[in-house]
Each structure stands twice: as structure tokens, then as C-alpha cells.
Length: 34
Image (cartoon, rainbow, N blue to C red; front, side):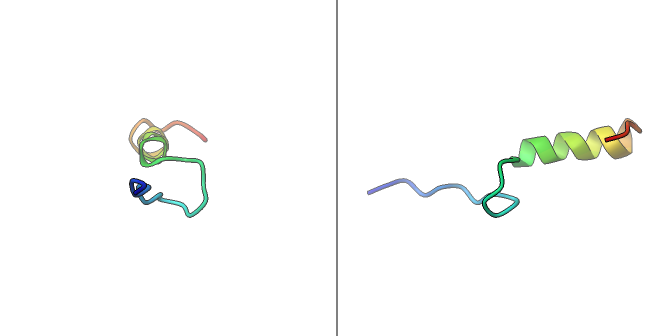
């Protein structure tokens, strides 16, 4: 009856795949510190 919840990158974590992708690009492609 209920729609399935999409799988998260980190179990029981708040960050979504979009946030993690943004951090990876900022860290490695844009050479920005965390």
C-alpha cells in the first residue's frame, strides 16, 4: 500500500546522493576544502 522508500547512500543518514555528489565535485574538481 505504501510506496517504497528510495535507497539511501548512507543507511539512516540525512545526506542524499545529490549532496554527496556536490561535496565530491567541490573537493576534487574545484579544489575546495571541506
